[in-house]
Length: 264
Image (tube, rainbow, N blue to C red):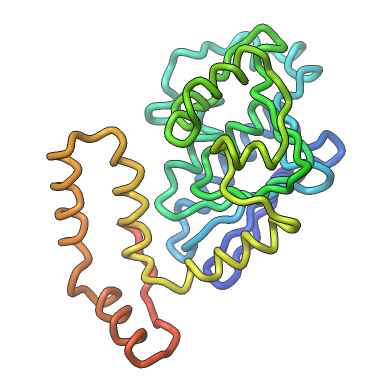
């Protein structure tokens, strides 16, 4: 089954969760497919932006509880081993998007529960419909958010809001998601808006975009001294190089930039 589809055009990778009959809920096969998709686009130097979306009525309804209860792969699999860098397998389904060198834009609609919310949070920017239903759902099942959500939420959502929603698993709307900081923009058509933004980002110097994401990802964890030094180090790696000069020339000449693909 083609659980996650990837379409790459004009340097934009559209990654579509493709389990619409289950509202793109997460079972072991879906976890593997999402991780493989993230790793695949991360290795493709032609990809400059990723757009995440869900087929059917939902972005992702979270864990497929009915499938997980009887699945020994999940029940018997230890959580502590770091199977993917700093993350375990389940965390990596969300963290892989945070860790990609290029920006990721989520286009969310319908239902975004539990693990689906944490995957959405792995994106740099999130468009969402006003009537989308979201929840930090894990408390309903006697669990805590453990798919990298606690590390992703804390950078954009107030601590007391995180705690309230975690302790209660209250369902909230797309409008509230933007108000709280879980999402970026309310949109009548999140996918169209995500693609429009992706097209704009893909027209910029990929060297500068990759470096910008690298610095922005690291900034919250660095001291002021280390943060300032990192800015200088990363800038030094691209200034006066071909893509940076092309950004200047194409802007001055009012033409589309002819950039080389970039990966560190």
